[in-house]
Image (cartoon, rainbow, N blue to C red):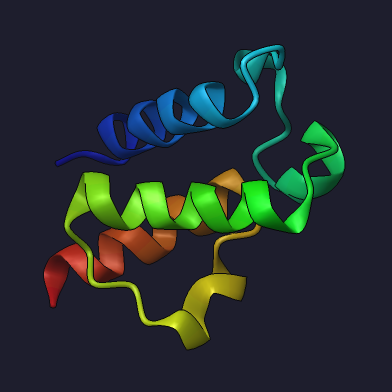
Length: 82
């Protein structure tokens, strides 16, 4: 899967978590919780949805590594290679 395909899926998941957000306007390097004004439960649901969508096996200790769009893509690429 390419970086762009991963990014598109990440944005689709974000759209499900924050349907009012214009995900195409998000800064890929800025914290998602700040940009979308989502709470910790929504953030947790986002990471769990990423884990489900990508069958990534994201360890709970790594949840904090999924804070920006770019970091999500990097982490998912890394997990996809292991």
